[in-house]
Image (cartoon, rainbow, N blue to C red; front, top):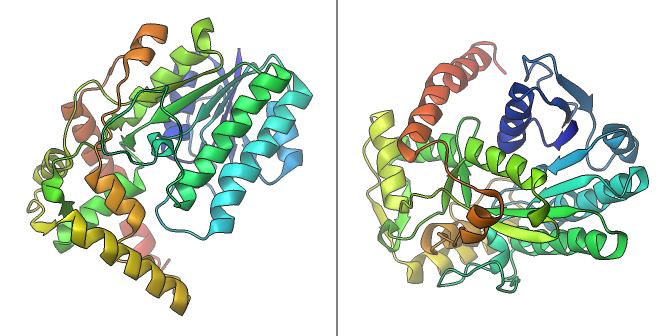
Length: 339
């Protein structure tokens, strides 16, 4: 069995490639030229330099594979439309074209997001429609899901779509490193009291779920919500990180009625002034921090036996140990060299 993992230099792709290799599967990892070529220690991980805009590298990457795990994406709360479209739409189309040209029997597991539901006030099942709320990430992930479903309907490509909530763990820039910096600066906001759930899922739990989904015949043509079985609020998550980092818990409280228009005004200001920096707050971040993302995972449990192998407590511990033992030393070395 040969598996291709796109975005293998990122949070999820790195975890998935390692777990596949530990299971003695042959792994092909697609990474960008700028990525660290020494990401992986195991011999059964072959690295291919390329990206989703390079069709030549995609054709080489999919040659002879049995499963494609598509983890690569533009996943942020602030970037221009062209960046989102290139990574999440053009990239998916290019990869699907390469896969279909190679073999219509290749299993294709596509990583989407619960953001496609449009941040509803109440959680919904997979049967709910996707809703465009005018945010680039939300919109481009909807378009990419439609492209994947089109490949299934028109070409018979055996696809499965995974919709994780908030993925955290070692190598998480957004939900470990950035939150640490915000906690340290006393600028981590809790919106509406931090009572909503981010739909947390530890990165290795996503990886294990994707592997199980790829091996099940029941998952072909379907989409699945994913989050860990235990549910925490943003307040519980940030307080757990603050405690582990030995930092004060968040004290900044913002009501949604203030946070959303403030984020909108910040985005407008950055756009008008053509500022390259990220706004203090974005509408995407406000939605993430205020809307319940504990979407039901019954379908994943029923169809491929999903369960959280790594608990919340263990996930926090693994994440903080990575930050202390890997991230900080690397950051300090770069600072010392003037990078």
